[in-house]
Image (cartoon, rainbow, N blue to C red):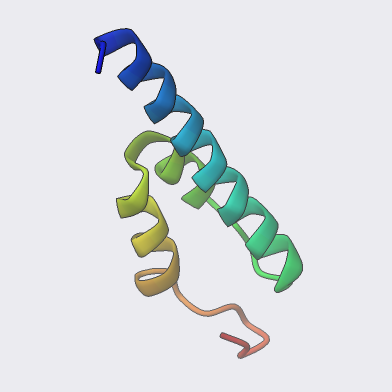
Length: 62
């Protein structure tokens, strides 16, 4: 795979993952906070942090 193709695929994937975090936060009435930006930068690690390391919202919903 060419480096340019790899870079484009990576950018598209990170944008998609960050969009998923944003939509999930909106759908679950949760504050997305910094997680879309973290996911945009770090990809799957950002998604893992969003789901496992963020404090639950004040409403008590997971």
